[in-house]
Length: 209
Picture 1 (cartoon, one colour):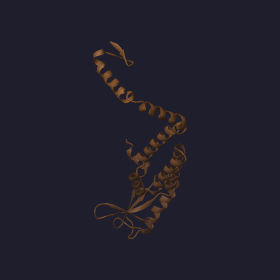
Picture 2 (cartoon, rainbow, N blue to C red):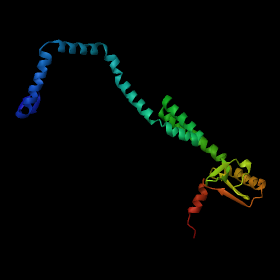
Picture 3 (cartoon, rainbow, N blue to C red):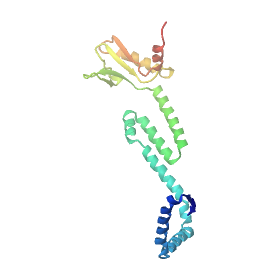
Picture 4 (cartoon, one colour):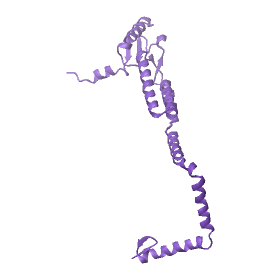
């Protein structure tokens, strides 16, 4: 075993590598001093004149990486889907994204929470409601409650788009009474779509003795 070129290795294993390395070194640098002088000149220029600008390189590289990651996080297809389903939620998502980019992540999250709470309270106090009318292909179409459309003669299917509690109970009862009074022909059945009424779901799921 021998110490060659600062590496501990077996003679028969490293000899060929050492010869190749020594040959390349002699071929590049020992024929002339142009290579050494060029390397010295380049290092001198960097150390004397480019130290300041190069000090910003880590921040610039990190910023570009974060910027590219942020671009990949933008889901345009998902945003367009949110806009079709709920324009209010799209506005919240857009405002949150702009706030995160301009101000900061923490401020964007806080603003998104506040806006979501405001929209939730607004929907709870004034929920969307409609009457449902069957279509030829088996689907149901929502119509404005004021149109007083019946699913079948004497049957009204009423949709109330929020959980029922004290803030919207008065509106719910007023809409039911108005549908009954204004029905043409006279109402015989009233079907309330309670898909969004969590309290009714919980009562139905409880076992009865």
